[in-house]
Amino acid sequence: MTSVFKALSDPTRRAILEHLQGGPMGAGELADLFDVSKPTMSAHFAVLVAAGLIVPEKHGRTITYQLCLSVLEDALLGFAQAFGLKVSRAAATPRAVPPKKENT
Image (tube, rainbow, N blue to C red; front, side, top):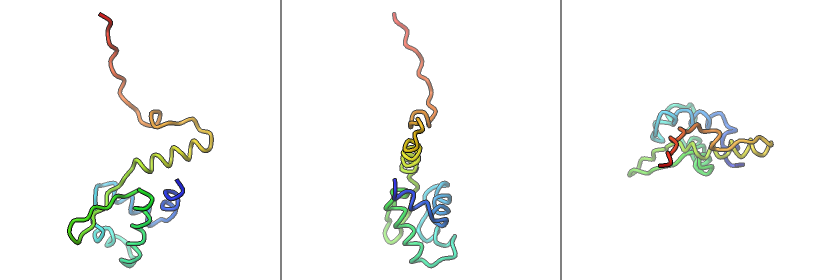
């Protein structure tokens, strides 16, 4: 959980996660959205990967990143539970109620 919150502490990394909500993006494509150097962007990507918030996929010389929301969900649930909130993934995610089986 610590690595997730460390990753989320930086506004650039939070912005990267926002951009990835629309789907996977290439490292260069993401880097072009920010006014920082490519090595700085690589460092941001490394922190997000280490936290498990994004997953890299290499295609030749290109790296594509994809958002991994389940890690963020787990960290937020753990954080809430650490403060005594009675939440769980089942409570946080609405699910359809299966139809009742009839006894025949």
